[in-house]
View 1: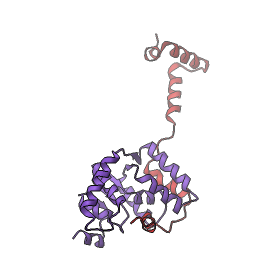
View 2: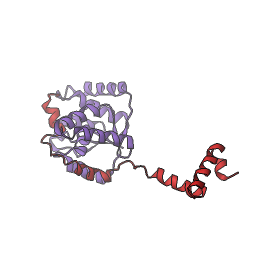
View 3: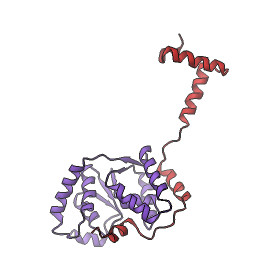
View 4: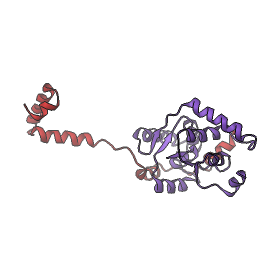
Length: 152
Length: 76
């Protein structure tokens, strides 16, 4: 079971430096990806900032695919449960990683709460992927050397 | 009683059979046509169709990834 951060979904539907990597992953794994409340605001931001002329089409495309259920499916997790787990992650890791964002913790908490095994994300500049790794999630693409440093 | 009448409401079966006769079809050839038409509804898109559709949108490559946007917005 694969949980995709919004960075992955935005690259799969839009066109940016990570789209080719997203395509490779999708062609190999043919994943059915969960979409939940955390994804929508960030996807909107990505589409309307990076592809304003096609944002509506991209938005409708995601909604159609979600309804189709072959590529995406709605993940219904209890928001309070996700938030409580994210809070625990923040309390445990914030003293060590001062710049850990709440949103990073929320995505990782959602993946853990939903019992996902793999966490795909292109956000290598935050602590999100490192945090996912501490929660025994298999992170794709593999952690960079810099990210691995944070685990020491 | 026809097989159709054992499966659906009698009134509907009679109307369906009448419609088939009017079209010069047997009940079952007409039923087959109706089923084929209904199943011609568009299938949900799979990842196999994804990249072709993406190409058709002629997207301009974005200079920034979502990670860049997150960073830029000062969310960290």
